[in-house]
Length: 463
Image 1 (tube, one colour):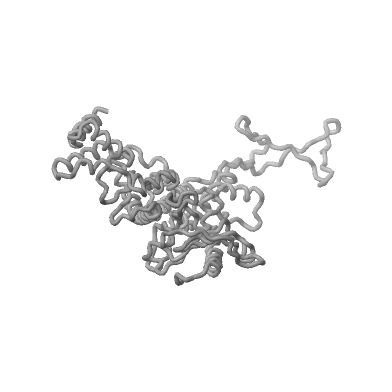
Image 2: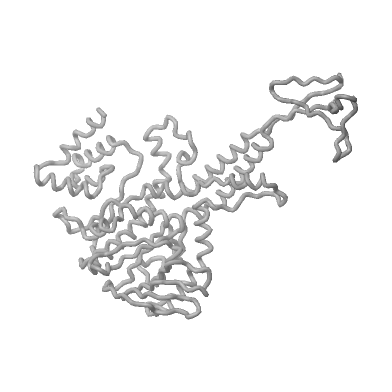
């Protein structure tokens, strides 16, 4: 595609692409919400079997998204050239748009579907105020000159809702390097332009968040590849429920004894069933409080053992472990009881695979957030930073004393500037760092972080 695509042609092309990808995204959305394909049941299945099949759905997939997403939290922007402690314009825009809370929606959508979108457009009431909005991949598509390498697309299309077919009209917005064109797409009247809002950014302000992009521009999320394993878990749970319902109890049997016939109390004659014409029989009362007695010495009592359930339970646990291994999620996050008596060092080793995956997500998402920051600075009238990076929160399993001890040694032995290590203290946000810098300047300009860090291990040990 070229950058001279008209809004009418681009919107029709984009809508056709959205409709093509929609069945795939809808399937992923169904599974993440627990609407799974049912387990195999016979064609002659009774209502009991159908109820068990409905109850067999055990949705593990949200954990595969929530677990890494909870370790992805942007806590600040850093750019070269700011030495007075002031906040860069991109961080001001971040806070104004309340992205501290909204970033999780974007990260989870990107991990779920393989990509998500963020738009940065000027506020109509204040053109120098950037408005950051996340958009689901089910409602937006973008076209690139090189989808594997380009950080920004040539143009993008966003719709308010995806129609059932191309014959249904839908409202959309065509976004390119000049502005936003509002359109009505499809329907009997065809595509119509409803309005145009210009912007002065010079680029298409749409940023893609994708955790895994190959050299052909194809994206992969964490859910689609896990659906077959999730179906296998549901089938094993269904088999377990069937065995529990129909075969988990002992069955007593009696052979060589005829049941007692119901007789008329006055005549002593057998009472016949008018429907079958056969004598009625007294039911055998067999429960834990009764003895069974037979008049015939040849009568034999026996029992059929219950179906062992441990094999079904083991099959479910094996499939869950496969799910955890393929998704790089620690098994202890999915299977209870696997972290008993595990030290902080052992827990960190068990989670190493997950944090390697999270590090890869941070590289990809961090570059996208830096692009968002540059667009915010451009909208605010500030030149985009030449060198900038986002500051991620630390979610690894390390004790506070270990972290502070390592930071203190970096200051004392390696000569690392003490103030530069403040953001690396677990739980410290960019706002905390700014407050500390102001307090240090007002109270004691000569205060050294090394002196403070030297006291923290003793306090942590005392706690």
